[in-house]
Image 1 (cartoon, rainbow, N blue to C red):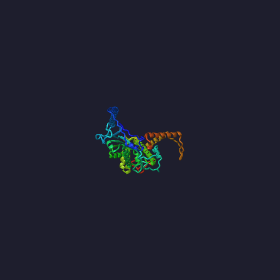
Image 2 (cartoon, rainbow, N blue to C red; image 1 turned 90 degrees about the vertical axis):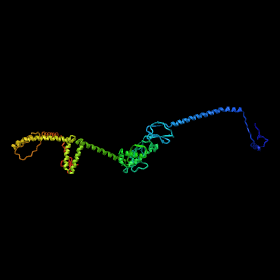
Image 3 (tube, rainbow, N blue to C red; image 1 turned 30 degrees about the horizontal axis):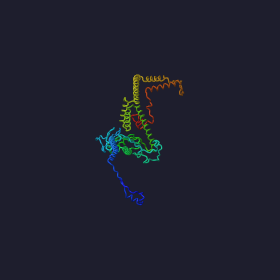
Length: 476
């Protein structure tokens, strides 16, 4: 049911009252439906409601599955694989887990509570840290070698702090170093309780730099450059002492000085000095080897005992202890006659003993000969002398190198100019040569070995000839 109102366009209504009429009037629309209509409407809305309910159920199921997946993923995120060479520990709400002394983890895949409930802290079990720039000069371009930088160094361009690294030595000089330190983690609980794992290398570098400054102040520049292992060992001890004081649980395995150098401006001069020292060591070693070879050749491997006796003998002579010097000289003689003495001394002694035996045999023969002539000499000495004289003349005159000249009697004073025949001269040379060969064969040694030059003769000092009086020979 509806009610009609006058239209504003009705010509009978004045235009001025059209607005008032619209403001004061209203229209109402009432829809009345029967029960049949409401049932039809519900039947039309049921499929939509069912679709909406099904969509809500499906969304809820998907949400449940997603939540279960998130829970499973969260739980499985606690599994962590620890590689070889890594150590660490596990915490639950910040507290370290594990029995006392067995808190560190082992390599492998292990389950654990995920973060933020649990957390696994790891750090390398062993690591090497290099310090290249802290004590090393700036060489310029990257491709410049140390030798090239040394050749181009200028004494008027000094080392600048902040740009060039260096360390002060005990003698006030500067040195440049590059180092490498190797450390291992013995107590991960102490290490991770004191240090952030990301800052361990930084801590090692700082402790190393402090130890280098302390140790370098105890070595001279030459010792720091030449001694191979001692500086590194001292630096390692200083570092370990500092890390133990921090209770870091870190053990310094080794410290190596990979590079060491004097300031570049003086490195050339120092290099020449080092070369000269090496040459000196080489020459000294060669001299020692030559001396040892000569001493072994003189008295065999046991020459040291003979030298000690000779030194004792000379000290007694210098001090004026003649009795002790004589006793030592006798001891030297006995020692040289021992069978373990070799070399030239043993050969000389053997030749001396052989010569003594030969001389003794010769003297014995002469003694027997003289003993046989004694009765004849006592009966008629003049006749025996004349006979021996004639035998001597006959022996001399019968030699091939002797020439005999006959002169007429009655010549008082005469001067003879004689030129021997070539045959006789050659015979004399052959005989003399044979005599020298025979003498050398009998003696079997060079007589020049016993001759001393004028520079070897000392007047007021003991000599190497071991003269019993000690007033001549080559002195100390």
